[in-house]
Image (tube, rainbow, N blue to C red; front, side):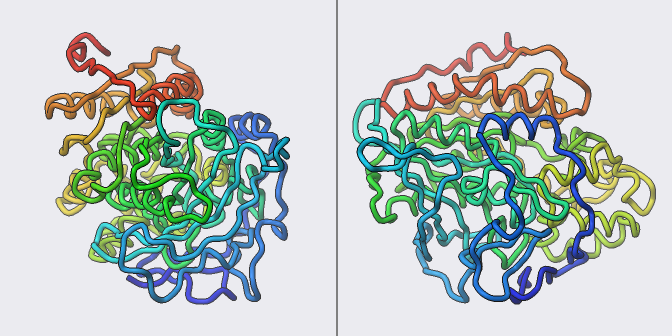
Amino acid sequence: MSPRKTARSSSTVNTPHLLEPRRPGRRAGRLPAVSVAVAVCLGAAAVPASAAGTAGPEPVVSRGVTVPAFYDPPARLPSADGALVRTEPLPLGVSLPGLDGRRMPGTATRLMYKSTDAGGGPVAVTGAYIEPSAAWKGGGARPLVALASGTMGQGDQCAPSLSLQHPLTIGEGTVSVGYDNIAVYRFLAAGAAVVVTDYAGLGTTDRLHTYVNRVDEGHALLDAARAARSVSGASVTSASKVGLYGYSQGGGASASAAELQSSYAPDVNLAGTYAGAPPADLTEVMKGIDGSALAGALGWSINGFAQSDPSLKAVVDANTNDVGKAALKDTSTMCVGDAILGYGFTNSKKWTANGKPIADIIAAEPKLQAILAQQRIGNLKPTAPVRLATGVQDDIVGHRQARQLAVDWCRKGGDVTYEAIHLPDLGDKLLTNHLVPLLTDQGSAISWLTDRLSGKRTTSNCWSMPLQP
């Protein structure tokens, strides 16, 4: 696999296909309303490009934001999955001094650790571990929550670990908001340790982020849980109960990790998984994203899968026009805010050589159908109890395909708590039907998962699926 960046002196990218991002010239004119709301909740301040991280000479710059030298993987990685490559202190963007001298809500450490990608090769992944100041309020020893962030983008400046340091980042045409920081802080307040994964290629400067690749994401989340045990000062051990938490892209990652845990990471003591709005069937999810406020995510998906499978180069080249090729380059360094402002409500017909939507291209290409079929979540039984929540009005990560995942798991004998979230229709393709359940269900999701970490039993409601929307 060709490296994404070959020198820290370059702000452009070397990729194996048509994906070389250009130096972007588009600037963010305004923040999406949801970004502003979350930023206010986090007490965030805008971070100028020069303050986006401490880097050595000749830094990598992504859309005006300096990526710290920490995120450059070494030439060689450890052999063990979850082994730490390096760590450094991570100052939290929202933090207060505690009465005992420790920072509240905890002490954070930036991580780089080794994982295995979908092709079976070694990959460096970054993230963050936070040791809470609060005592664990549940039963037993302090547990660990491995948190998979929702969609942040594909540019390295969008990495969740960077958003913990800078909850709001604004660069040259880039806007990144750490909206999952709220969930992180709520778990810390309960006394659970938290480890956050950046996923493969998000933050690390050697490759593109393989967006919604179920194996890469599931492995990265499980290996983050392994890596947390080796952090200096960490109170968690191999015996600590582990909970997986994620919504949207993160819901897909946590769902995938729940399926893969028994074979890939049996040493992770999994107690429960929350999978909110999981993109379980990408064929259906791409239809929902196309023409929506988050249409730019189509570019991230295509970029990531083309990197993972070089044989897709010819298929992508043959089916995209010049506008599409330029969009793929552009989106590969974008965060969510950039994508909304730059490609919101774009119809994929504008990107394709024959003027048909991407869904039609996939339907006509057996290779593309096979790739997406391999990404289907629901073919394996999750190891531990799972709470799956989906908004019945969700038109981005479609409700029906998320409900089908619960059905698939129930048929395999999984311990599934299915929650259909009833809200009014808040606007077609605006992201509101997808994002509002994240906030309205978050308290219940965190309570359910902390109960599993406390050793409390749960009862599957698979019996009720025929009655559930």
